[in-house]
Amino acid sequence: MTPSHHPREPSASDRPQPDKMQKSHATGNLDIRDIRQTIPKHCFNPSLRLTLLHIVSDISTILFLFFLETCIPLIDNAPIRWALWLTAGFIQGLVFTGVWILAHECGHGALFQSRVSNDSVGFILHSLLLVPFFSWKYSHSRHHRYANHMEKDTAFVPDVGKQSTWRWKATRFAGVAEDSPILALIFLVGHQILGWPMYLLFYVTSGPQSGLGKTKGFFQSHFNPQSGIFSSQEHSYVLMSNLGILGMLFALWHVAQTMGYSFVFLAYGIPYLWVNHWIVAITFLHHTHESVPHYKPSRWTFIDGALSTVDRDFGFIGRHFFHGIIEFHVIHHLFPCIAVEESKELPGNMEWQK
Image 1 (cartoon, rainbow, N blue to C red):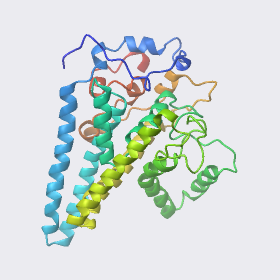
Image 2 (cartoon, rainbow, N blue to C red):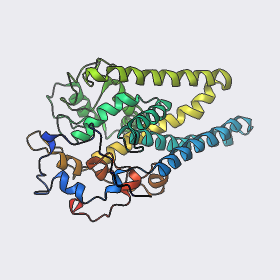
Image 3 (spheres, rainbow, N blue to C red):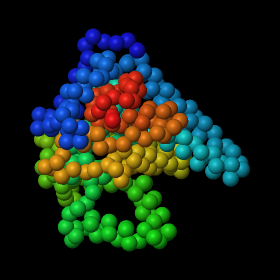
Image 4 (cartoon, rainbow, N blue to C red):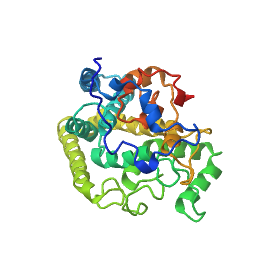
């Protein structure tokens, strides 16, 4: 990697705002500027070579697996055929998730020097996975601004509202029913498979003040330009995100006309369900732990929220399929514009990590 003499500044959506620059309660006088000074300047510049390597590698793997999947229907033995479909679906799901992560990095402006390049590549990659790129990019930037804020965080915010709310009742029922193996299995599968689509559709698990306008309500959706999640300047980009998904749905329909709907489900649908699982699992593991606090507004600071996330070791899958994002989540919350590959260069014993 060649160091640059002109470090790229984080985008406005990722840069901590003045009202969130307070010094950390948990780490004394440490503030975001102190932390930034400990990081080599070249880490704020993405490597074009590594970026293209990851993108080309993932897309090539997807195409290669797709080619192999076209051969599976030719196998006469049904058990072997189904075993191959399930295995291919699992592996393809891992690669799909890696592509999802690369698009997520583009949303933070972390893969290319140019904002246009980041947005263009991220839009294409996320649309391939039926994700509204710009819509989610905007809500996700608020998650980074207000991580672990009890009112303004956008995901996995604990419900401490009135006991009459539907969410409190659902949580209470789930707690009572968790000793039932069948119900526990139903809740687990529903959480892992439907959690991500439900978040996109209805903005579930978000904080009560996490949007720019009225956040709660049936029409608070990543697909609704008029949703309180977005500002008026973002409406056209929400529509563009929707068009990207419609384009991908049309492409899938076109493939189904040639290959059959069952083939599309097996070759694309199963990996897509695995992506849903992995995104929910990764986010849950990063932000849910008995030692991880969620702060009231009077107690929250940007640094405390960012440091109250959890790095996880996912072994081979995390390093090679998920591009290391699971292992370097704390630094990702402090400086989202640093690509994961640059995060790997940072020592593990820096003062703010103690």
